[in-house]
Image (cartoon, rainbow, N blue to C red; front, side, top):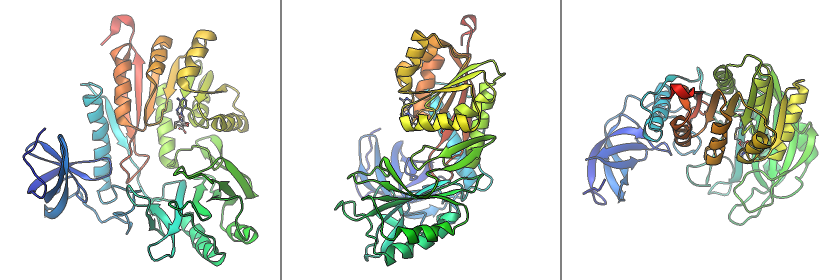
Length: 461
Ligand code: SAH
């Protein structure tokens, strides 16, 4: 929509939505304005900074009426840190926002009119939930050591001593590492100059096992005084694994591919329900263990297994969902593009004594048609859990051809979810159940589980 607004104009608007960076969104005569530092429900005087054809940006001048959904964030650096975009919004309102976001995507992008939404599954205590934290290491403006998180949209580090969503043990680990880094004159990595040694500190914690891993990501292959490092870190309760990860590339990808063990096992073990998983520094593993258990329970409920089914788990990572489903299925096949993850999946099947799960490396859109057309392997239930870009369109065609009774779609992006459901429900499937699980409390990210059931040809919608 065009606007008459010009740069520096001031207008009063009502903030009605949240944008992808956590900023407020309001409208002036139908024209959309993005306004940082505002919250849904604020009435605000804003000044236009930039206008485009369909939307513009403005900055907050004055709150004329503060939203009742504003809360004081527990974390003192929440406004600057890029991690928690929504900590200043009441948690119940965050949940409502996430549920609405999915509903809107399904109706606007998916074209659904009837949306069988079940109540969002939020956390009772949405703090200290993450089992993985990656702290960049650098320097503050005054040259002192900075360990923390990137500010929103930039790579300047917000020095953080206490992260309110990370595991509680992180603070103790960092309290040991800060003086260790300084005393041993370990140079923080400088991204711009591609110089310095220590890039990131990765900490993983097994939620149910209490096992702890510390992995230092280095632009090199060694670290000074590692005997003392190991001696100090070992004193921390639960410590199981201390290692280096080598990343000498000029890249903003955090981890390199090589691990150098310093002490203990090169992995930690954790379990979800009755299934145990070994997790190495490079493994993909859901970051919110409390909510992951709920997510997988919902996926299992939606899959409605009786023990006779052939189930495919596409985009299976280290086989977490596959092994969870294998407990109730005849046979599970997992497909994942990263070879190391499939090695982990096979090992995880073995340590749990699960024999009815088989894993294949490759792109789901290539492996599935081959197994179906070539080897005539069927599917009663297909679970997909793709990355944000969603499923490859050719994969959706294979799913339609294989005609499983049920499809369970686990999604971390409601827009691509809606796009893919439109294809499946435009043909043989019906949208049965939708449930949002808050895996990333205080961030704008949204995780959804959906159940589709196959319509018999005479029973199409
Ligand atoms: N289901 C797993 C992981 C989901 S994350 C869990 O809950 O832990 C999505 C996974 O899809 C990642 O492991 C990623 O490596 C994998 N992936 C990305 N593109 C893929 C493709 N085309 N085919 C198969 N796997 C893919």
